[in-house]
Amino acid sequence: MTPPATKPTTIHCALSEAAQVLQHASTSPALDAEVLLSQVVQRNRAFLRAWPERPLTAEQAHAYGALIASRLQGTPIAYLTASREFWSREFLVTPEVLIPRPDTELLVELALQYLSARRGAVLLDLATGSGAIAVTLAAESTESVVYASDVSTAALKIARRNAERHHVTRIRFLHSDWFEGFPGDLRFDLIVSNPPYIAEADPHLGQGDVRFEPTLALRAGPDGLAALRVIAAEAGGRLIPGGRLLLEHGYQQADELRALLSHCGYRDITHHPDLQGHLRVTEAAWPDD
Ligand code: GLN
Image (cartoon, rainbow, N blue to C red; front, top):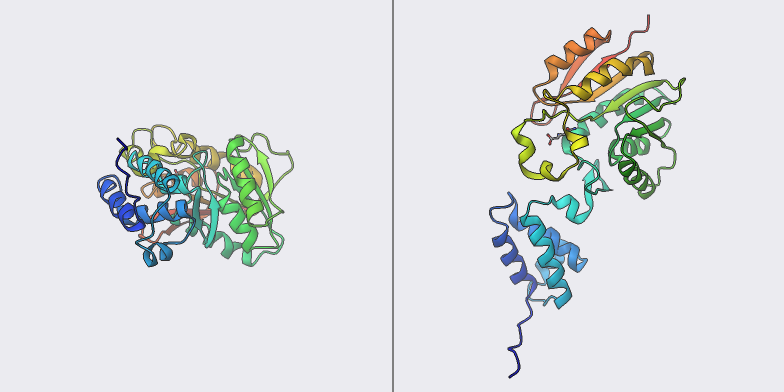
């Protein structure tokens, strides 16, 4: 007896089945289903809507099933598509790097404001990860001299690929544990960083995308301030007199960070709210007298 022929699934059926499966695993099951099917059929979401009755090949159905299974386990969409948009550019992202967040665009905006009045400024993106900040700043502020560092060689590889992807050839990449591996005489006009700032016991670490992101990029000791403490203590020695420090941090860390920075000798400490109104980025000046 021949086995019953399995009816090939269509775009519409595959999508509605996947959205159903993802119902409790995602806050956007229908969107996830579309984004992942777009990737499998190599067409945009408008195509999926225009051709709901098109059949999927057996290979496509199989590949889609595997992606939906990973998403069901919680794997972030950005890792499944190896991509995330930041400041209107597509960045390669892998599990070796933090997924760029819209919150971090505030850091970029403030850095660009600072750079707009300073031609030829030398800047550093400390702990660059995917390179989203460094590549954006280098692309948008073409006269700046841009350095990007990370302790993770895997992250630096991704950052380099992102620089190539966006044809930004002038970033100098440094492999370094904070400032440890930097040439002795290197000084910056501006240091920006989105360092790890989540407390080890924060329940947030057990939810959503962060479960799959690199610990190194997220966790910062029992109070979440371990990395910010190191940066506050060491960045001053790497800034020119009057240089600026711009740091992203947790929404409840502004007061503690202000105390740390002022203790280390910084002046003009200002907090900036993100789109949700949380104090998310702190700016500080290194004294020039
Ligand atoms: N903003 C991220 C989050 O809360 C954390 C990023 C970081 O630690 N630098 O998910």
